[in-house]
Image (cartoon, rainbow, N blue to C red; front, side):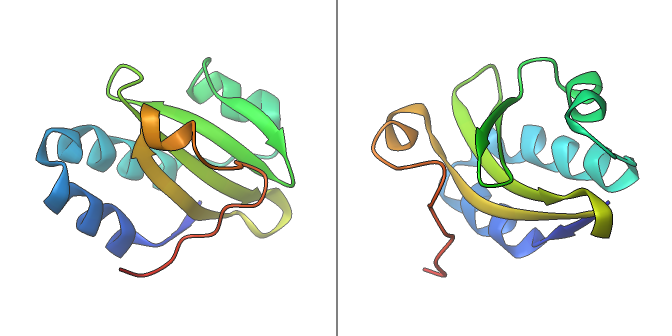
Length: 102
């Protein structure tokens, strides 16, 4: 899969260094994946949730962090829309959140 963008993970990892390894592992595994459906994504991460609007929520580092990605299966592309703590996730709308450069 093509993932947009590594810079989002890199910047988040600077603020939350304890998430860096888990995010890097997620990135490398997703880059090698060939997802064609939610079933394929669930094979990768059983705890992934589909929340609508092409958005999927991944638990990172034992559910300490959440990553929301829009996945376009036909284009084999994953767009990172949000990475945050579980508490930050509770404050946003997963269906509409967009990543904003800091």
